[in-house]
Image 1 (cartoon, rainbow, N blue to C red):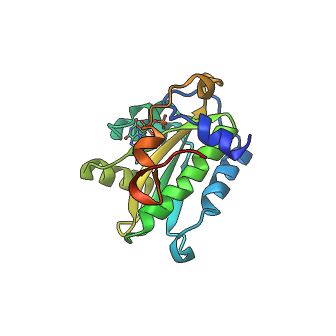
Image 2 (cartoon, rainbow, N blue to C red; image 1 turned 90 degrees about the vertical axis):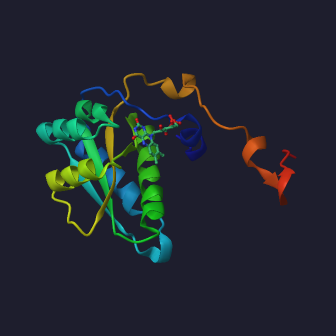
Length: 175
Ligand SMILES: Cc1cc2nc3c(=O)[nH]c(=O)nc-3n(C[C@H](O)[C@H](O)[C@H](O)COP(=O)(O)O)c2cc1C
């Protein structure tokens, strides 16, 4: 799959086949994250791979914004240093993971763990040190519908709403 095709077709996936994600594919996802660029090349991230069914079930129970985690065969928690730019860097790493996952036939969803109590409970469950930040838990699994990218509705602002030419406010028009 070409990068642009993956970018254009990727959708958030919240339903997964129960099939396990093979070790080499898990490794590829982690490499996709590890190789991401970061400010000053600080690489302020850790990736906690969770495949144990009971732990995944408990993650789903704790994450009120992503109970479907419980049905995924794999979850990766994205953990960062507690520094101002770490979330941006980790966002780049996890987006690379999501695109590689999409190419592999997997789907994923960024699940926000914003409530302090939930965040603390998940950090405890996964043994994440207090001084680090739990940014998200990403469930991964094979997509039930492989052509969802072709048929999915991409709900985005138009280019004319977000793109400007030369100066802010001057409309961008394709050449
Ligand atoms: C920072 C961020 C937080 C998100 N949090 C959640 C979440 O907690 N639960 C959820 O189901 N989806 C979550 N999403 C997924 C978005 O709802 C989804 O990306 C958006 O609706 C666009 O859909 P698409 O990814 O299929 O194009 C999140 C996405 C991002 C980037």
